[in-house]
Image (tube, rainbow, N blue to C red; front, side, top):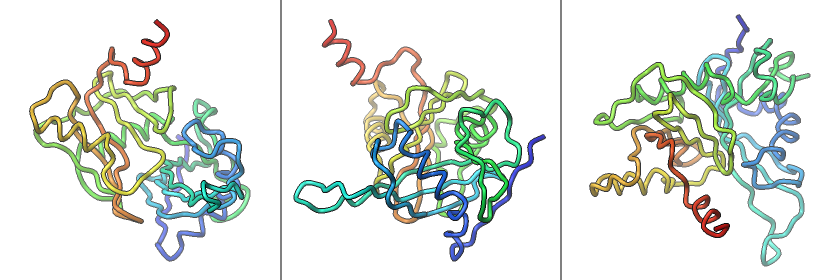
Amino acid sequence: MPKTASLRPRRAHLAEPMASLDGLLREWLPRQRWFAGKDRPVAELGLLSMTELFPGCLHLLVHTGHGPVPAPGGAPPAGDCYQLLLGVREHPSPRLGRAVIGRVQDGPLAGRTVYDALHDPRTAQLLLERLRHPGKAGPLRFEADPSRPVPGGLAPRLLDAEQSNSSLIYGDEFILKLFRRIQPGVNPDLEVPDALARQGCDRVPAPVAWMRTTHPYEATLGVLQPFLNDASDGWTLSLNALAA
């Protein structure tokens, strides 16, 4: 069985793992479809929050800045906050090949391989269990609507189509949308469906569970909803209408 790394970073030592991850993340982030600064080097990379979600799985919020590309008015861009779930193992499964970020050469994680943990079925299943059983993990908060229970043991799969988020499907019954680019406050993907559900609207699936953070600010990290297998989003509908 693959070995896992158990890391419990103290707040005073948050910068230490970045000695291992900095170079790998600077190369990996610009290649992701959900990364806003494509084709530009990551000039600044800072760690805002790190939590050991499970043994061998780190939840990170990182701040990125880019090169001297001026924003309107000449002011430099402020940068972005991204949510990452990183698997850390000495010998990851060969099935995770395309999810591998790289093998760490130095720092406190030296000798271990880091990968995008959302591609790991074990991580996806444990993440669902966190949402099924509300609680805390460091600054992370897992919350659920008790009137809409979620069954356990649902097989996960990661959707290939990614834009500004990543989505996990559980047993073709539920979809977990994990926001990659994090903004302060309640995300509209949680706020709007919840408000509609409270008004009795059944045209939009009501959130059944969600995760958020309290550090470095209050923000929504992900939303679990019933999965409508034959549904289309507004952007896809618009494109199809234009094509017709």
